[in-house]
Amino acid sequence: MPNLTPEKLTEIEARCKAATGGPWYAINIVVGDGGKRTGIYQTENASGSVAYCFRFSDDIVPDAEFLAHARQDLPDCLAEIKRLWGLLSVAKCPNCDGSGCIAHQVSSRQYVTRDMAIDAGDESLEGSLYSDDEWEQEQCQWCDEVKALEAK
Image 1 (cartoon, helix red, strand yellow):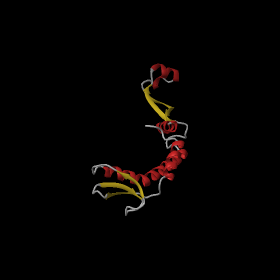
Image 2 (spheres, one colour):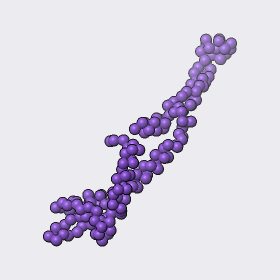
Image 3 (tube, helix red, strand yellow):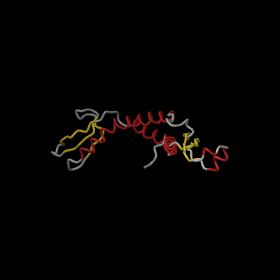
Image 4 (spheres, one colour):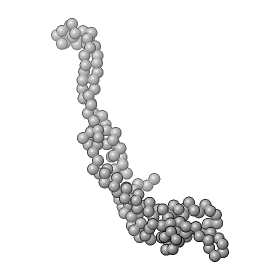
């Protein structure tokens, strides 16, 4: 799937602005020879034609509905993309300070060995538990995902 760049978004917006104004409606009409035709119109009473969809079956109606609704739907989608891009540009990571690293404390418990007790100057500590607390850095997944989106 191709990436949607700001330039591509601008091109799509230009096509929307250049198209006939909306809303559009897909309306089935019967033509002079009794055949059916589905048209895309600017009004609900089949005036102000925009386009016609010809096919000799009723399965053209979903396509015509799609085309008609694209006139309203596409500008709405473009506006939402711009809104979300704006939010993303100022979003703050909920996990870290934006550095991409999360500091967290790691505790490990272990028994004091004889050598450790001797080194501590108190042989009675042998066999007791102690905690070795330290801080570690973990890569922030949220920041990684944002960076991946920005790289596209």
